[in-house]
Length: 371
Figure 1 (cartoon, rainbow, N blue to C red):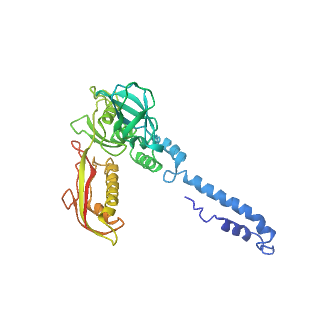
Figure 2: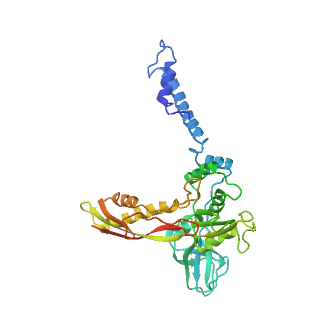
Figure 3: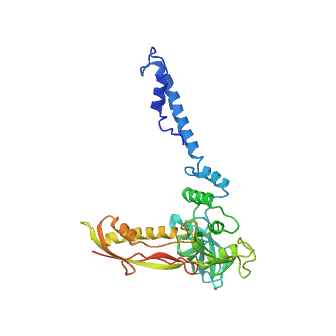
């Protein structure tokens, strides 16, 4: 890329003055410097714009709509925000299309009843506002639609997590990966792209021939990077290879491929450590901060759960490393040292199973600190 960093007002102005013969008055108060000053400012703005245009021409530096155009050349589109689907529980039957509102102040959003479940009084509710905001609230909801004899309305489980619009960095990574390994004819990349495009899916592992020729297992997590609900698993199964007519090419999977959609198992990670506190700090002060730091680390592990290790074998990993746990603890303000760090009672890394038969993801359990 061309370096325009030296094309500043001062440098441009000086270069213009240098081109004027020495026998002319070039003092700051003379007419010539006064006349070329606005031009130097204009040229500086031109070079700033030119530098921005240059950045927008490359995948590594493009942003926003420019990155969308580059992605389109690679056959990709930015994933839009998707609406959360939640479980609603009512004391009486409610009509499909009924609307309800959460009661959490300025963050309040509306939900609409879209389908009944197999349990009496329980329905699927879709958020009218797309994004992760639909995942946040749990509790009582107020009816917007008038419903006779309704005395109890609750919103509970997340059936399909809502997700925000794909960020530039995620789209950029996906585009670069797609240029290196092209999706074609039911290869692993094709399964990844097709499944990640389904609303509510955040990550996927793909295991070909896991149970013999023609079989494929795809394990999915929700957009919240937790194991997918039964509803989301069924949605993905119906889109990729509907049951009971698997292998017939009725979904996105190629004819002859029998695809099983599943979800990983949670592995609770209980963490303990002995810490040395800085003067003036207590365990009650630092423990919530440590928990937040550890949760952030485990979230990063879950986000990388669907990333294939290398291109010559099917291998995934979601291990929890004790060194990273230690780093998360000692980086907390108020803690100067930590020893005897244990994961589930063991002073060693926690190696999770990632195979066609079993897939696991770590979630934070109890955090016990002693001083």
